[in-house]
Image (cartoon, rainbow, N blue to C red; front, side):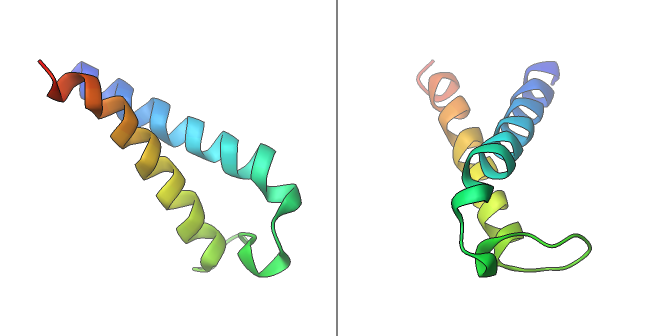
Length: 63
């Protein structure tokens, strides 16, 4: 269970880092997240976190 927690934590922090630090400055205004709103930026951030989680889960599936 602790391993699952760490995968989740790394995927959320890594995804948010990628979205807010690297991608945010180059995204068009419609794809940027605005605080306290459900918008396209939040969806993009979610998908990045989900992709990182999937990449972290691949090695554990091979065992």
